[in-house]
Length: 429
Image (cartoon, rainbow, N blue to C red; front, side, top):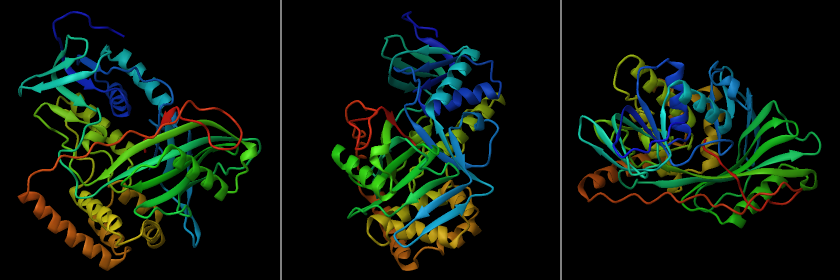
């Protein structure tokens, strides 16, 4: 690692602001596509290491990511109060990737790319159309041809609907085999449903004795620390797991925005945003990883070919519109969350639903998927969304509310039974 201590700005071709998942995937992609002729700086106050988050995503088997995975499953379960359905995802699979291997690969790429790391926050970003001057917390700064900014940023304005995906998960170690390592629980809607929102549990087993068991809500407001623990304990009991035979090894907490508010991917000519700030989070599900990976690969390919490092939109415009309508229907009570997802999986092949949720379906497939939902509530939501869009054009822009931090307890303890006392991990889907 090179520390910058001189007073003059560092001149580079490419500056990466932030060092989390999006930046790490980008460094690995630059290395994978053999981009070796650029001067690169990474500006981040934290050196990312270890397991500070877990990503879950679906896709085809992949020679690049497969060596890093903690687990993957060809079968997943979707459960409601009425039934439990096992889905075959072939030719896709559901996969889990923890952050440690991603950060390790990025560190190796950073060395091979001979990048300069500035251990300081990026405090100001000024784009004059030809170069970008980044003011850093160490007082020196960076002057770059392009800036790729993966730091969390608020949307440009408030959304018509804004929910949060908020969750807590326990990494449980059992004294005896209690999990099925061949099958993940994708969505289990047998959890008590909130008055305004959707809740579900899920289980991602690494082995027959070790799994991530998580409680998730899609709703406008967070729970309390005790509320998350109570919900998780209730879901553990619903699964029939004996707390006396379990140890909580790690705890994960997180908050992901679910909103139709716009996230400008290119706020100025030479600044490009990646990750959630660049629109990679799918509003209707909160899943982010696959779009982040696509963004990183597209940027690296463009730079390797001598083009501007601007990725394609994370999702088609029509998908962002459908997400806005679905969020509105859920928020206004036109459809119930368990019913909405149950009908999607009941009336379509699982592979089609997952490709739709990842923005990979054709318009013809999307017509079939939309016909799977209840017609009149979705028509009402579509009309309401159209009226709201007109209002947005004629009234002053409202600032977006800040995304609240995750509710975090004290340091975790690896003890038997009961809820743990805190967390050491944050999860991003």
